[in-house]
Image (cartoon, rainbow, N blue to C red; front, side, top):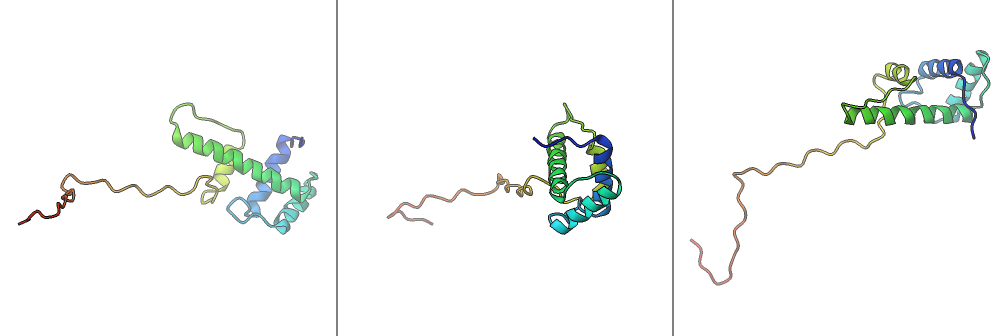
Length: 125
């Protein structure tokens, strides 16, 4: 089981990640997370780049879950101690967990005609 990060370490991590532009979709490379780990070490916190990558992945997953839930439900809204900080750091964040919404199905109009049935051998005017 992974060890829990102290609150002040997560706070620093999120600030560094936001500065490194890893919250808005520029994530995934080992180099980016090595830099974040080095910056974190300069603040006295020691995590590997893999731990940083996994932590960000988990934070983004939790954020998406809560954001999606609150977007679907007006009642029973969920909160989370990191939600506001992640949300404020990522105004244009490409973090949607769900695929893009499907376009609405065109409604059939009451003026549309149902095709007539063609009966062989019958005359039509």
